[in-house]
Each structure stands twice: as C-alpha cells, then as structure tokens.
Length: 320
Image (cartoon, rainbow, N blue to C red; front, top):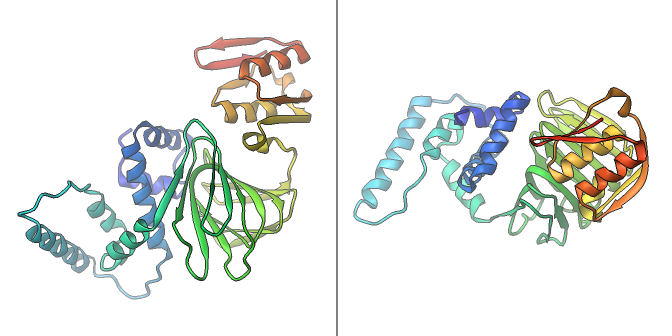
C-alpha cells in the first residue's frame, strides 16, 4: 500500500480498517525516517486542530503567500550549501491551510523544545522536567517538551503503552493526548494503551478524567475505559485482572483468568500470534504466576495444566 498524507490523516482520525491500520504501523516500524515523517505530520496536524478560526479562508491567497515565502527562502540561500528538505511541508499546507501564515513559526518553536521517548525491543523509564515518571512499554512512542509551560503540562502518546506516575501540581493539570482522546489528571498513577485501533486507560491511584468528542468520563482506582478509535465510543468497567502490569512487574499473575485473556496478553507481551483451536478452551480458568519466563516455558505450563497441545505453523501458534 502506498502511504500518502491522506492515508496518514485517516490513520490519525481512526478511519482506516484494521488491515489498513496494520499496514500503516508496519510502514512506520520499517524505517526510522518514516517514523520521523509521521511524527512531524502528527504534531503539525494536532496543533492545527487546536486553533480556532471563525473567518473565511482564502485558499488561493494562502497558497500564494506560502509559495512566495518558499521562493524568497530559495533566493536568500541560493549561493549557500543547504541540507535537502522533505516536501512534507507543502503537502501539509493544503491540509492545514488555516495556519499557513503562522504555522511554520509555531511548529518550529514547538519542535525545538520537543523530545522523543521511543522504544522498540525493551521497556524504558524516564523522568520528566516536573518530576513525573513515565514507564514506556516496548514499541511505543511518547512526545514531550523539555520544559512544561507555566499553565499546563502536556504530552503525546503517539502509539503503544505507558504507565504514568504524575507528580501532583493542582496549579498545572497534566494532559495526555493519544489519538483524539485526552486524559486529564493532577497527581495520580494510571496506564494508557493505544494499539490496533483501541485506547485503554486503567487507573491505579487518584482520579482521571477522560474526554473525547464531547464525552467526559471520570475514573477511580480499579476502573478502566476502553475507547474505540474508529467511532470514539467509550466503555467504562472494573478492571478484570492485573495482567496489564506485566511490562513493569515482569510477572503474569493469573487468578481465575480465562485462557482467552491470557493468550491476548501473551500475544501483546511477546509479539506472538497464539490462537485457540477449540471454542471450549476459551474460558478455561488459569491460576498461576509466571515470572521472567520465556513464552515456550509459559505455553508448556498451560498445556500441562489443561492437558492440551500446541502446534506451530509459520508464525502461528495453535493451542488445541
């Protein structure tokens, strides 16, 4: 699939099918340059959504001003050696035309103070300028400023999963943006996941307020919200288990956990493709704790417990 700006916008808005979204994620993980392009695009796109403009937009005049600016830049530096620039700016200008007159200054200012915390094959922990501690799961990306503004603290979880332990400061609320969902806290700890078209927020301590498309729901400890990226529907419930902690605790604690749920978490943790070959295996209750064990060792215990077998077909693992 050819990746263009229209597809990236649809991905940001949660309008792609599951297969299309997986194609985008594969493209992002294939090359760091792809990831950089997407990050620049995403930040400028989100900044444009924050602006309010009630007047009429003169599209042709705005484009002409942009062309004149670029022509002037070329004239000034025509005798100098410059680094090649991506044509991304001109493409985005057509999308966020409303900020064509001020967007470049705003974006460069924002980008200059921005940092990335990105993980691939390992978990990382970092401390932000306000003392808040973030633990990022594998294959995740968090954008945050070097220093927070005087009135608000904001970060962007572009993809993946993170645990936030936020330092209390009632004068400066903390906002996490992930997709179109905004999570507001003062001082609390909670887990946020944004994977495969689903956003999930689980609260451990304090109070969390989740908003999307005008909907606002508060969460207390032991509660979670699942948000479908495509339609924005939010569902609140009690957390069924503590398996979400695995990347911080290095443990999988199963307490009457149905086998389908353990398989779901193992696939997430080991980037595997395990499926249940028989419907009657789905709700078998598992009671055990796995600590720092390999996927093969865990599957052996599961098979012995339920007297079932495994079969591997290419990248697929079938329990039957």
